[in-house]
Image 1 (tube, rainbow, N blue to C red):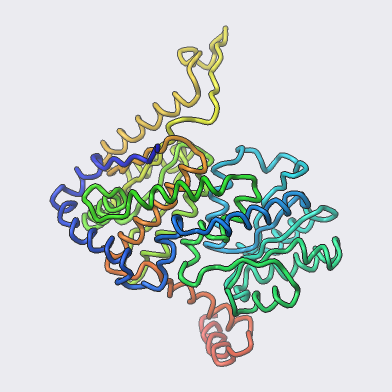
Image 2: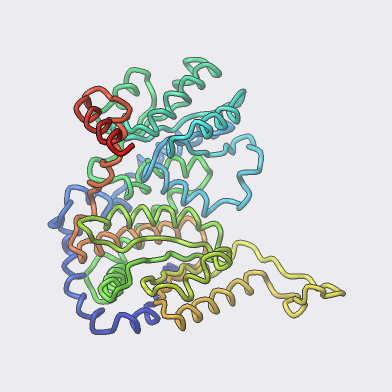
Length: 450
């Protein structure tokens, strides 16, 4: 089994071995709290054993649904926000051709596209223009069915699908992933006869990529969800015990040791463009899990070498409140070599015959060394390749480390009370029924400031 590698030596120097070692008991306790469900948020730990306990029957059913949508659709719109779309988007982008969005759909190979992750009339109008006259299906993901962003998108697109394909076909081409027994989407799915999958009650959205929430869109995109789950199950076994060499525990301890040393911002770094949306998934996972009670490392990300030409100056010489976690991909999917040129006007003939990825590796090593010299601690994570099994490992590694890290920090990693603040104001401003007092108060507040 090829697994991920973790190297913290270029971070320990900055935090201090003593600080790092001092967190070993806290990490061991956190791992036990996850396994025994004795910590804060223990009702949302269904993801901990999910990879090894996912029924084969459920996987087979997801594959069958995906095959049906693949056979009938040119596009499948995945409607959801936050954890309801980021995990699927991360995996699909990591495994896809960099320019897959520009390729026309082929029979049996629909394009998976996303909606309900923003409130933009232009986005929805553009999406309607793309889907006009095309065969498409919908995967709508919402536990309640009333979250504003996906609810708007679904209302618009379900009407469009029924108008284009007819009511019977629209019913067949819509799949709802929602609560087992309650909520607006569950009610609608029952009334309309949509095929449904359940979002487990004990799995929060940002930990849901290995549930039908992520697995169905990933399978529709044509990727092997059995290998994805298998990789996660391997990492589940690797990180299952509170031993000193547990990689998830080591990463969590290192992050918290750096945080205690004044490093308040973590940059997730990749040198492969396919990992851009993986970073977006990671940002939600850590930001929503740890950012509370006035605490938490701020998770950010950059794509190198691209962002070295925009953010590189700040990272090298700016305020020393950051550390980096670099993900390296060992084996590229293809090998592209640099040709020789007789005139050599660009001066790069010294690279002729070398692979582009060799140059990228040297850029990565050189960047890591430069940033260490500039006072930036670096945690290094190496993965063998970008494939389903490896991504499953990486997903579970970060999930497990997130739970451990949150417990070390002393917060509940599995709630998100701050997410509701903007919604309350938005509902009041829009005059949502039941918010009359809040509407009056916020309008007075706005009027006083104008």
